[in-house]
Image (tube, rainbow, N blue to C red; front, side, top):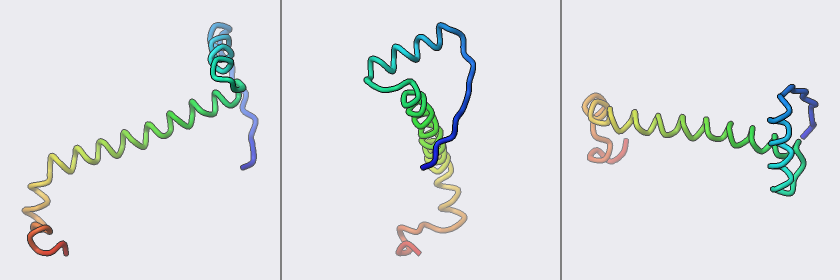
Length: 76
C-alpha cells in the first residue's frame, strides 16, 4: 500500500508520550500512530455492529409481527 505523509502538530508532552509509548512497544512513532488510528477505526465498526444488534433485539417483536416469524416458517 502506498504511503502518504501526514504532518500534525502536537504539544511537546504529547509528542514525548508518543515517543515513549512507541519505544516501550518496540516500534517507530509512525507505526505507533498508524496502529492507534487503525484501532480507533475498528472501534467505530464494532460500535456500529453493537448498536445495530441492540436495535434488532429491541425491535425483534415488531419485525416478527410485520414480516412473520422466519424461524417458524422455514427461514424464508
